[in-house]
Amino acid sequence: MYKMIKRVALAVLMVCIAVGITEAAPRYRWSFAQPWTRPLADRGYQLFIDRVREYTDGAIEITLFPAGLLGTHDESFHGVRDGSIEISVLSPYVSIVPGGMMNWMPWTISSFDEARIAYAYPDGIIFRVMREAWREVNAELLFSVSQGAYGFGNNVRPLRLPDDLDGLKMRVSASLGAVRTLGNMGSGTGMTMETIPWAEIYNALARGVVDGIWSMWPSLLDERHAEVLTHYTHVGWTWDANNVVINRELWDSLEPRYQHAIRRAAAAAEQYLNDLHEMAERSFIERLETEFDNLTITWITPEEQAVWRERADMASVWAEIADPWLESVWPGQDKGAYIRAQLDAVREQVLARQE
Image (tube, rainbow, N blue to C red; front, side, top):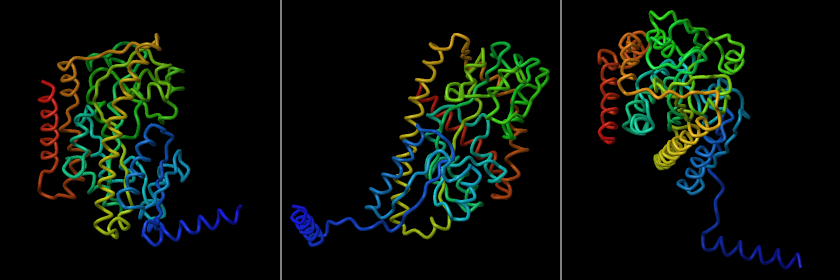
């Protein structure tokens, strides 16, 4: 019986070869490093992988290594940079990507609709700038993964206006643009800032080491911030997005047809992830409103948000944090003013749709 099955299988294989329908072995086999444990985002990365395989007729086979299986964030970055890892999703911290601050300058993007425009290939203003930032470190930007806007949580009082930061001790990170912006918004209030690693936020709030933090809807649940906060205000002052990049030398070596196929797959994955995270955000808000009696959510008005934006004094933050790098890449072009104008146009475009 076994011999008969084997003969039939061999005959089928010979027919397939004769009519040219056998699947050739992949021309490329790549690794995709995901340094964090984020099952929701992994669905988008797998869609990207599947589309690359489809659009290249199986010529490119990519394997996703989730939850830090290929190393920490910085190890994954160095792997992509030296070519030992082909693709990774990364955060462009300025310590490793000098122009990385442009990915998430405060008061630029505040909604998924704005992100869909500003981060999109090929014309999105943030995409165009970040592509240059990644090329400086031997990587090519493929697509971005938006996760939402940050607000402020604290255990003292609801925050509606910057003056409500009065006397609060706020946890901050090493993201210099965000630190400078919060410092400006809290200027004159007696607010102080304490640098604490992200992983230690829960304990810092529970022990009263700090009064408040910046956080976002997913983190209130996934990192359990909601368990140790009594107030959260959706200010929408900083947008969280990570970047999927590929080793630049590998990218430049690819035939145009493969580059085009990867770009198509990247665009599909970015759209899918925007929709997925936006839908999940609504679910997070519903759960927070119904399951956490200890947490009061404050929704500010557009007029109140404008006060936060004005107090941020973003011109000074750009002059310190962004303009020096922009001038080094585009000398004499006042690129900072151009980018801010483009971002204002994105915001106006989205507002016009909502009217």
